[in-house]
Amino acid sequence: MESKKVLIIEDDVNIASLERDYLEANGYVTETEYNGSDGLKTALNDDFSCVIVDIMLPGMDGFEICRRIRKEKDVPLIIATAKKEDIDKIRGLGLGADDYIVKPFSPSELVARVSAHINRYERLVSKNGEASSEKNDIIETGSIKIDKPARRVFVDGKEIILSNKEFDLLLFLATNPNIVFSRDQLFDRIWGVDSFGETSTVTVHINKLREKIEKDMSKPQYIETVWGAGYRFCRL
Image: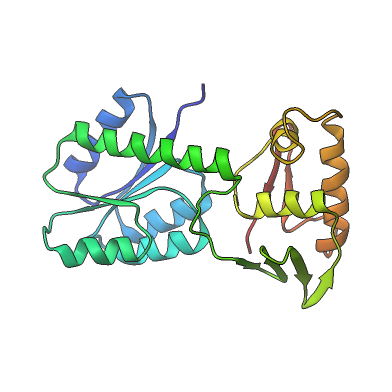
């Protein structure tokens, strides 16, 4: 099983090292950034199973990092704060953090919280085909607008007509941006594990979607092919 990857954004080297050591001892792969600006850049440019964010950081505070990450991605966010005031906890949760932990904390408690949130996130993705049940009804990225309840898609303000499977495939990818899914995973998710057919139908539907949403199929902006792995949706 592939190890889960956790990003630690913490300017205190000793605390960051302690978090890293305990997480890695429990099977996680970690990456550490020591200032807010670099932490945000890494969080947005790579895929992580969980992000731990300190509140007081040089360059950009943890509140702004949470707000910016949540705007782009659905990934478990845990804020670490040295303050015990409820206002910091409430503010962090209001900006999209999933949990908070107050310093000094037990490293084993941190590992337990990380594990719990990753497991919860994966159950939601598995059950709903979405990273969170709290998503908005409208997804907008670049020139694309997806109206989930109405099952309508617009490109540059003009509605395009999709088949049911095309819509389901686009919606699933768009609600899980920057995550690579294999053809087998997409076939199981959209057509169902009990469906008859071949995973090549995924490629056919991907190509049809690209014809309808991409300006240049030879250089797709939204649905990228990750050679040897599958496909991922990129939000612009």
